[in-house]
Amino acid sequence: MATQTPKTSSAPVLSQASFSPATLQFLSKLAQNNSREWFKEHQEEYENTVRTPALRFIEQMQPAILAISSKLTAVPKKVGGSLMRPQRDSRFSKDKTPYKTNVGIQFRHFLGKDVHAPGLYLHIAEEGCFIAAGIWHPESKALNAIRICIDENPNAYQKALQALQNHGFIMDGDSLIRPPKGFDKTHPLLTELKRKDFIAVKNFDFKELCKPGAVSFCAEQFQHCSQLMAYLCFALELDF
Image 1 (tube, rainbow, N blue to C red):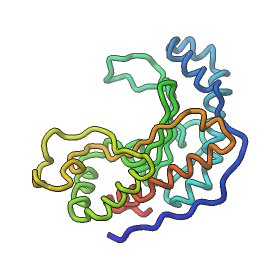
Image 2: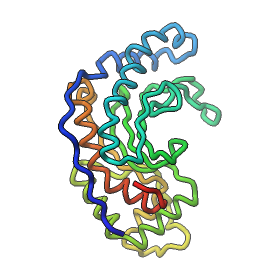
Image 3: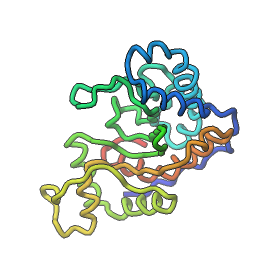
Image 4: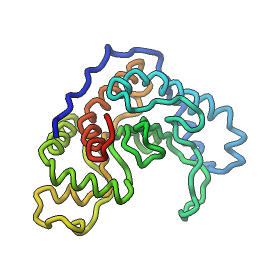
């Protein structure tokens, strides 16, 4: 596999910060009052401190996301765009609280229809914030394709891992206990082959998002993940 050279970033983006301490304050209050009644009463506060800032941030990020890959999307829509909905899917969870106490923003591949597509991700929560890239819970066919690609093209994958490590990212997510079927238990990349998620994660302080350079900061972090994204798209036969 040929290694794709990451696209260069545009000039630093300095604009008015989208997020403020009020964003975390609302999420904190929501955690303490997680009910539909309370949320409805505080809908305007949610709009002003969470959703509107998030949509503004997504809009500001569009040029930087497209600079990484024209196949990624940054869609500032209330529903069906890059901002993940606040409602929780509690059908299969013991926790029946109706709302998420975090903000999730995903810049995913345009061919992806859900969170299981390759993409870049920003997580905002009172407990901590992080930037992530890769693919979460891919279905079995995609997961097997990634594993086969790692087995057949190990060097490019290792270079992507090294680039992530050099910039403070770690690989995270669920893994198998035993080697996946069809792969040698002595494989030098067995730890990687056992992964069920291929996600690179880097924690950061929320204060970074309250600065005028927040867009540039996030764009730079996402650029560090471009080799991993290119590799995963190659494995899944997606353009990048």
